[in-house]
Amino acid sequence: MDRARLGVQVSGMVDPAAPSPMPFRRHVVRTLVLGLPLVGSLLAQILIGLTDTVMLGRYSVEALAAGALASTTFHAVFILAAGFAIGAMGSAADAAGRGDERTVRRTARMGLWLSLGAGLLAMPVLWFSEPILLATGQIPRTAADTADYMRIAMLGLVPALLTMTLRSHLSALERTRIVLGATIAAAVLNVGLNWLLIFGNAGAPELGIRGAAIASVMAHVATATVLAFYAARGPGMARWELFRNLHVADREILGRLFRLGWPIGLTLVSESALFTGTALMMGAIGSVPLGAHGIVMQVSATTFMVQLGISQAATVRVGRFAGEGKAGDLRRAAWAALALSGGMAALSIVLFLGAGSWIVALFLDEGDPQASGIAALGVTLLGMAALFQVTDAGQVMALGFLRGLQDTRWPLVLAGIAYWIVGVPAALLLGFSAGFGPVGVWAGMVIGLGVAAVLLMTRFWRLAPGVDGK
Image 1 (tube, rainbow, N blue to C red):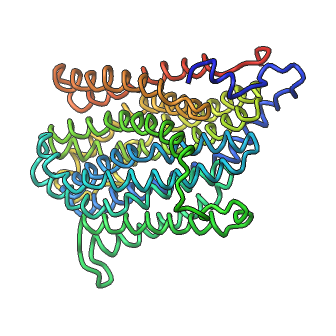
Image 2: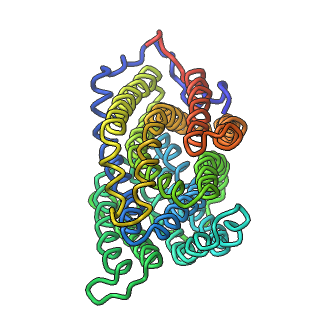
Image 3: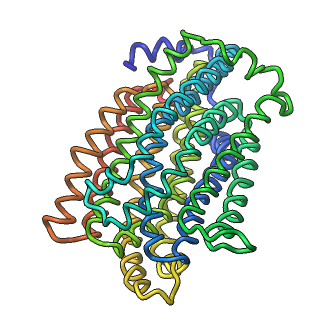
């Protein structure tokens, strides 16, 4: 989106008769009220992968390595298909700011259409994952175990994408508490099913990594069912008539959401490819580095969910203020989100540096002969992950702001440059050519995300309209 088009979209931004922006403190409070349930729901969602990793780590090191690789690969496919669901959030928030209820529900319906189609198209990639993983140099046993997980987990892809679309719809309407409740319930369900199906407790079959996949599928289905029911029958939701005429195509909104969503999906997959690429690099080094990498990535993903929740709250608030034509509030909402993001990054750094050994130990069985090697490397990588917190937070916040302005194509270009032209080559150079191994691979990720943060944040502040310097 160019600046001229943005000026039309947020018309009225320089009206001297417009009300003064609300106080900065109120922006912080409003962002917290909207964002905390989103943060909680994202944390609960990541607990599905986190508990898989913890429980598979206590099953065997081989299962841990395959689970880490499977989780990373599934996530890469999922986010490629999730661009339409995420794009629906900014579009619906802008429509809500303009008081256009019809466009809000039309956006959600076509978001469900696009998410269903994207999920079905992506499923074969998960089914044929084993030859793809072998071609990247993965250990045959790890590739086979990962494929076993994928062929089951792919059944949860469509429910997970539908959940994301419903989550965007409810978030744009600031109905985030139900999202939190449904996701927490799904995480608890996943833990219970893992306990039964991974280890064969209470008379259930011992399925190992396949049991973890079955549990994850059931958790995704449960979440989608609860959110769909609430969107249709929840308090105050019936007037939206979300599922009425769901079978009828809305070509205008479908096309608009497709144009908005595909760059988001490619941007997300560009970032995820950086993480997937590093996981493949670790797998090529050995199972111990891959296991340590999987632990640290799960921990980092947990803290990242907080940043992502704040970013999504910022998307809604920036989108609403853009629709309302309130430039001063738009910019203050962005600064409030950045203040919250910076505070969270600081807390994460203190945690990683001060409690690294304890964190890594949570994932390991001390009796496993490889546990000590994974623990030592994991603590070292957590030190790199402390730097990662700052750069990753910066780029995800900038992307959230830009999605609120419905600017998605240039962020794709800028992110691609940062992740692929800078990040991946840096990881290869430092990890292999320079001989720094796993630490060098992580340093490459930090560099790539840092460049993305600078480029994307510059883009937002150049686009964000201003009023009297407020």
